[in-house]
Amino acid sequence: MAIRPFNTDSAVGKSIAAALYSRRFPHAVILEGSSPEERMSLAKNIAAALVCTNAEAPCGVCPNCRKAAADSHADILIYSVEDKPKAFKVDLVREIRNKAYIVPNEADRKIFILENSHTMGVEGQNAILKILEEPPSYVNFILLCSSKSGFLQTVLSRATVYNLGQTSASDDESLPREKIIETAKEVALSVAALNDFETVKAAAVFEKDAKLLREALPVIQEIFAASLRIKYNAAEETSEFGSTPSELSQKLSRRSLLELIEATDSLMESIKLNANHNLMVTALCTKLRKAL
Ligand SMILES: [Zn+2]
Image (cartoon, rainbow, N blue to C red; front, side, top):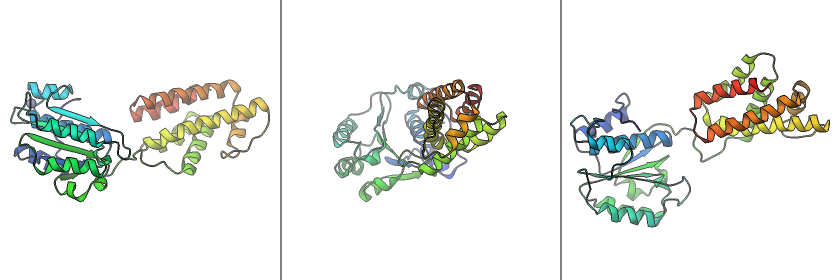
């Protein structure tokens, strides 16, 4: 991770930077909203600024900053759990509490970054509360969550909340199935159109919606598979995809359909590896067209 200066264009960025420069950064902050990546990256940046030895923190060049950037600073401790109820176990909170009472190794401060900390149950939150009430002077807690609503009021009263903006389509809930199917049908049909532009046009809905792409791809694949079955069996089948599979089976060859199924496979694989989203949309268009 690269250390970068704080984005002071936003109100949140400004107030975080101001708190850091004044060297009066709160002992406990909650970063809520935006995407998990954005929250973690900001948290790491704050942590670097807190351990940095230069006035313009994070400077990015001092040994503390460099170790922070390499995720290898002994005084920056990151705890990450899944975004599932009670994933942040009380035992883990106790372990963190014990570590907090041990003075830092290399820096003046010790920073704990807790991802998905809102998944702590009541017991866990009460355990962390004890240390938030009277933290050792050298400790900072950065609690990350999609929404602060999972925290007890007592915990919220001990922390400064920074809202990073609207939560990007998170994994909490699925998109409506009809929307996914409609989109998948349009994209699948566009492949059989005569010009490349149709696919680009149909795939444009994915540009600002990584979640829709992730959920629609397997459905696009199901549609190609249904078309292929129709081709093999020469029989209609009724499905939630309506007439789309049979239309496609008339327009595309077996070979093309097989290639399309493979293309969607490799696209799903890339998404799992967290490929850059904009490149994914482009890759979708080229791969589907190339399969023909
Ligand atoms: Zn530095």
